[in-house]
Figure: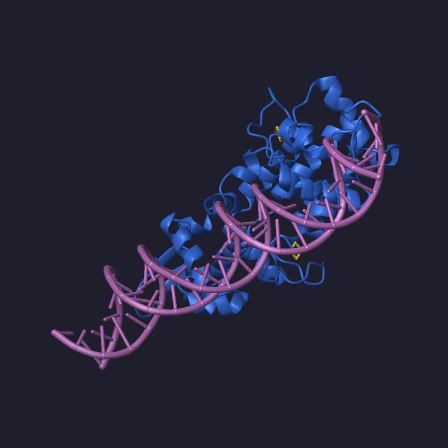
Length: 140
Length: 140
DNA sequence: TGTAAAAAGGATAAAAACATCCTTTATTGA
DNA sequence: TCAATAAAGGATGTTTTTATCCTTTTTACA
Ligand code: FES
Ligand code: FES
C-alpha cells in the first residue's frame, strides 16, 4: 500500500503532531521513538520540510515541529509528497491509462474504492488525528 | 498497492480466463498480448501454476490455461499467492502488530477499508470477470 | 526412436528502494 | 568571535524487486 518511506513519514508527522505546541524534536529523538533508522528518516523529514508539510530550525535547540498550518494539512498531502499521486490515480493493474474510456477489468471497483480512500485521506487532518492519539493512547 | 509481479499475474490470469475453453497460450503469446517482459512473466506463471491457480502442459502445443476449478478461484487467492497476505492483514503504517488491542492512529479506518477490499477481492471470481471482459470489451 | 516445442528450474544482471556516512550550512550561546 | 549543535545536502553502500539468460524436463509427433 504505502512504501516504507511513506509509513515512516506519516508516523513521524503524527509524532510531531502529538508534541506539546512549541516543543521541537530532533531526528535522533524521533527515530528512537518510532524505532526506525535515523539517517533514512532524516531524508524523509528533509523532503517533508522542503515541501512545507513540516517545519524545522537548525542549530542548538533546533529540530522539527508542526506549525499551525502544518497541523491543518491532511494525510493525502503527506502521502502525495512521498509516494506521489499514483495510489489514487494510476490503474491498479498498471495499465498505461486509467479512464472510463479504456477501463481495465477492475476499473469500476477500483474507482469506487479510491473515491472512498481519497475522501478519507483528505479529511484526516493531522491535528484531529493528534487529538485521537492522545485521547485513545494510540501507538506510533 | 500491488507489486508489478502481482499486476502482471492478475492480468495474465484474466487473459487466460478470456480464452475459449480448450485453448492454451504460451508465455511469449501472453507477454506480447499484455506488453510485459516474457521471462519475468514466465516466473510468475510458474509460481501460479505451482500453487494450482492456473494449469499448464509442457511440450509442443502446450501452454497455460485455466481449468474449470481455476476459473472458480478469486482475485484474493491470486494476490495472496504473489504478494502474500500483508495487504489485508498487516498494519498500514508498518507497526509490528495490527490489532484492536494496540491500534495505530489509522487502524479503525484501515480496518473498515480492508474489510471492504477483502470482501470484494474474495467475490471477484475469475470466470465472472472474464464474462464482463468479453461483454464490455475491457482492456488487459 | 529422435527432434522440436514449451514449461520448469537455476544462475545472473539491472534497477529501484532502503539505509548509512560524511561534509556543509545555519543557529545558538558562551 | 568561537565552539557546539542540528538540519541540509551529497556520496556511497546494501537489499529487494524486477528482468534476462541458459539448462533441464516433459511432451507431441514425424
Ligand atoms: S483502468 Fe485499471 S483502474 Fe482504471
Ligand atoms: S495497527 Fe495499524 S492498521 Fe491496525
